[in-house]
Amino acid sequence: MAGISVAATFILGIFLGLMLYLTNRGNMWENRFFNFIFAAIVNVFRSIPFIILIILLIPFTRSLFGSILGPTAALPALIIGAAPFYARMVEIALREVDKGVVEAAYSMGASNLRIIWKVLLPESMPALISGITVTSISLISFTAMAGTIGAGGLGHLAFLEGFQRNNSAIMVVATITILILVFIIQAIGDVLTNKLDKR
Image 1 (tube, helix red, strand yellow):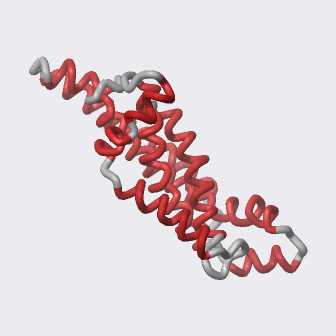
Image 2 (spheres, helix red, strand yellow):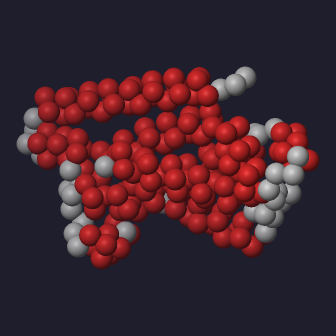
Image 3 (cartoon, rainbow, N blue to C red):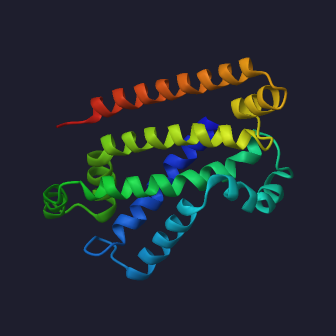
């Protein structure tokens, strides 16, 4: 659940973040209408509590997978819940790119798409990796929450085998395992961010 949702969140979040940045005032694809639409999508889905989002997406999930149970059925809520959050981080990262670098690329005749792929994304990559690290940790907690409604995973184990059967040992083991996963993800994110940071 976490692996697929992180990968999908990274791709969708970068797309939404780019659209928020590029259509904003003073940028290459400035368009107030589209900027408003993308901002509204991001703000709405970012504001809905995850457990409520799962419930709201039950008809969509059932039509897509034929069931609302299991790890696969949790993916739409996980991705839709996390991608808008990451999109805002992407937008912030892109805003921090030195305008002088972008202007230098323009002066050398670079096209808009080339500037996106060769300037904006590479220059903001440390912040993008840092952002997806934070988002991944949030997704771990989302998957644990999804487990309480039958999505499987450690949350399901802790709730069904631990809480409902009053077995505190299983709850402790599940919690420690989640903490270890969080520490590993944070460590990998820190290493990648430091390697990519040119400052």
